[in-house]
Length: 144
Image (tube, rainbow, N blue to C red; front, side):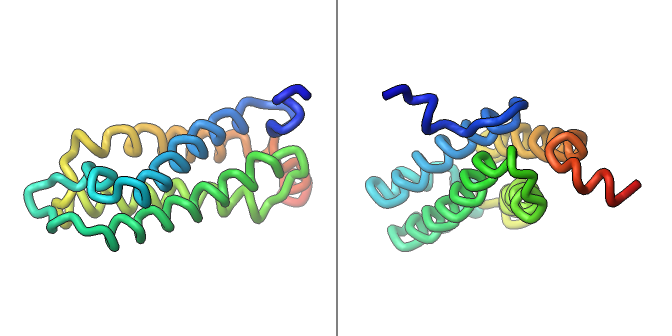
């Protein structure tokens, strides 16, 4: 049985971009439960609070919700689901907000630990915004 049967179908590369985020977020969500204190290594800024197991679990649940939204979106791209598309864009905004406030406002995360979200999320947002008419053709017709 080929693995490709279970992967998202349809044209375009956005599903693969989302798949990377799904895998990375899923792995981190699992690590927040299996090795909770080590999973919070990101929070090493000058004002980082002490690491706690419950804190890791909350972070893991947040990652799980984000992963599930992006997973659903990756499979729904070919169905042109507008609500899922925009909700996925909001997940990138949420991650940018989380890391932006933690680095620059609360100073609980060192900048070096926020580089990946600060690069990956804007790429995802710009990509999804620029390709919106491709993935949501019905929206383009209504907007015209």
